[in-house]
Image 1 (cartoon, chains in turn yellow, orange):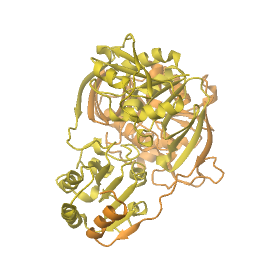
Image 2 (cartoon, rainbow over the protein chains, first blue to last red; image 1 turned 60 degrees about the vertical axis):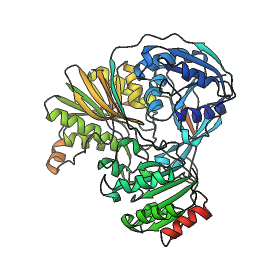
Image 3 (tube, rainbow over the protein chains, first blue to last red; image 1 turned 90 degrees about the vertical axis):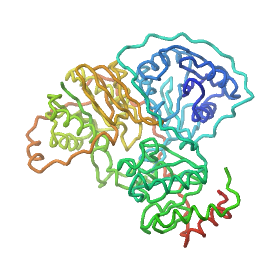
Image 4 (cartoon, rainbow over the protein chains, first blue to last red; image 1 turned 30 degrees about the vertical axis):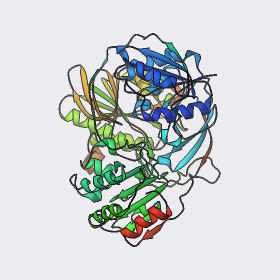
Length: 317
Length: 249
C-alpha cells in the first residue's frame, strides 16, 4: 500500500528536508505519493513531479493552506489519508506541529523522529536525547510517522515524471490566525543541511563575539550553530540552536567552540562525521566526542584558526 | 480564567542514561528523577499569569506511578492551587495520555491547558497537539512568549526558520518552550504549605478510555560509540589534521 508524504515548502519551492523525508518514505513503501498543500504553489508541484522516487503528486491549492496552520492542514491530511497505510512528514517544527493532530484524530499512536526503517511497521528511533535507540513496532492499521531528516540521504531531484492530481480544500476552523513570521535571513548555508557547521557556546561571552564564529563560517562556507546556553543568553537567535530540543545536524565537519557539551547539546551533533572541540577547559565533556580537541582560549585560537585557513590554497566548498 | 497544567516525572536531565543489558529499556532504579524541564516552564507561566491577575485558578495534573505526586507537589509549592494525580503503573503512550487529559479537561473546564513542548525521556513531542485535536481546540506549540487577551491568546512560537506569531481563540492548548520563562524555586515554607493543598486521586483504568498501547518496544540499545579522538597541540596542527587526515577542508 502507498505512503503519503506531507511536503514542507514555502509555496515557491520544496524545503530541503522534504527530499530526505521522501527517501525515508520510499523505504517504507516504493509507491510514494506527496501532498502539496499551499497557496499558488504550482512551482512546488512541478518540482515534486521531477523527483524519481515520487509516483504521484496531490495538490491542494487554496488560501486555506498559505501559512501551514495545523488546525487547517490536519483536516485535509485526514481526508486524503483514507487511501493510505502510512502518513509521513519530517520531524522538524513543521511535522511535529501538525502530525500528532492527524494521528489523534485517526486514533493512531504516532511514531516520532525515526532514524531507520526496518520494515513497513518497524522503525528505530532515538530516545533520552539519543542516549538510547529503541526499535519499535507499530500495531496500528494506519501509521503516522515523523522522520529525522538528517538520518536519510536527500532524494534525487530530477528525472522523474510523477502525475499530478488535484485535491479539493476542506473547511477550516476560524479559531487560529496567522500574524507574522520572522525568518532569520542569511547568506550562509542552512544549518540543517550544511556540510560544515561552526557553533558557539556560552564561552563566547557576548553576541558581539559571535563575529569570531561568523568569520570562520564565512571562510568555510559553513552554517552557524549555537548551544542552548548561548541562545538563552541572547547571543544569537533561537533558529541556530543545536540539540535535543533544537536542531539535529549531521555535517561532515562540526566545530564546537566554547561549548562544554551538555548531554542535550551532544544529542544534536554527535552523529557528525568529524567533530572538533575548542575549549579552554580540558575536562569539558565535549572532548569525549571530539575527533580533534584543542584545549585553548577561543579568543586566541579563533583568530589563529582564521589565519591558518587563509593560508590554505583551496578549501572545499 | 483557569489553567490546567500537565507535568511529567522523568529521569533528571543531568543523569547519564544507562541501557539495560537485556535490551528491555533503560535503568531507572536509584536514578534521580525530576519534573520534565519544559513542564516547569508551563507551571511557571501559569503562576505568572495568576500573579498578574489574569488567571484565577491553576490545576496541576500528572499521570503516572505514585511518585508522580512529587511533580504535582512541586507545582503546588510554586503556586498551583490544586493537584490531580491519575495513577498509572505502566507506560502509557502520548495517545492514551491525551485521552485521559481530555477527560480531565471536560470535567475541570479550563480556559487553557499548558504542557511542556516535549518530554525528555521518550522525546515524542505529541501529547499537547493530540489533546488539541481531540478537543478540537487551537494549539500553539513551542511557545516562547504569551500575551493573553480577553478571548484569545497571542503567542510567539519558536520555529526552525525563526519566530512565528499567532493569535488563537480560547480555549486553547499551549506547549511551552524552555525560553518562555525562568522557572522559580519553591521556598521551604511554600513547600510545607503545598502539602496541605488538595490533591485529587484518580486511576487511569477507571477513566473510561482505551489505553492499550499500540507501539511495541522490541529492543532498546546503546547508540554506536564514537571512537576516542586526539588532542592537538595548536591551531596549525588542527588545520593540518583537518586538511590531510580527515580531508574535510
